[in-house]
Image (cartoon, rainbow, N blue to C red; front, side, top):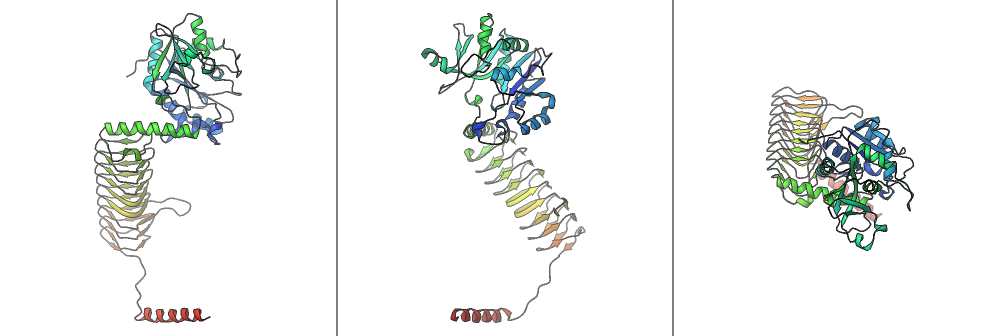
Length: 456
């Protein structure tokens, strides 16, 4: 458990309009790993023990405001209008954090992959006497990143923007991520001294380092991996962040004992949980909320979301498990079967071509090909219950609400609209009608008609 010596708070900068995303959706609401980027930053703040979290937004970002309010409450939002730089954005939270005494970290809503360990390292720097800690990374291509310039003793001496750096400073590969931590009272005091006397006319958070050093304070740089600090300003950045996330999760899964037959074709969500000895075949997608227990097999081209899959189950190929699916041990879901809000008992099987929605299926039930749970009447959803050991013949339609009793058999091609007693046979289809020789006369008549049409 993390030892927290002082109260902690986080300010998450999320007011950017994200014009390079070319989207009406606020930038930080775009998803990585199946959830909005802003959620990653909020969870990061929670993971490191922040008792107060303030998200800086623009008043026009209605979708974002509603989303954050639902997660944190309206009191966790502060507005920046108009945008005047990162330093100004942090100052917009000062009133909301009035009275807070403790350590403050500034995070970014478009940086979804920052690990909690990096923020803990920043806080640790404060515990060892630093007034400010800045998170940096060794960049493969430093380009226009601000450089973290270290003093001879290893302390952070300055943050220099690339456009203002000397040739010697441009050779430095340690770059600024923008993530910064410090005593809240120190950061707000120094921010009051920041000016906008620069080319952009903005108030920069990075100026705090120079101001602190001018007072003789200690500043520290903490390093993290470059991939961990990717920021997403465009759809291309978003795709890159997704690729990094997927690569990490695949490796983590395999290290934990999961077999990925073709790892590069399997896609995870942020909360996917696969236990050891799960086997995942190629081209499988895990949406949010999936837990697959040890010994299950997910076959190729399947899509799972909001599903709990027990040990010994076999899913797919080409299966779709939707939210609310709960499968007990040794269930078989075959090709082109879709389940939604359905529980299946141990050993139950639906081997092919079925839709099972809003159902409760007992142990060892066999669902034949083409079976449909008719669960929706255009206004309401209704449930289907199938008792243990029942057999549902192929191409059957079960019109909910309906209950099939334990051990009952439903004949193929039936449309069942009423409950079926245990161990009963239910057949609901029209009688077979045959007319001897009819096919011969039909073909003769049609042949004559076709020949006549050609003459015309």
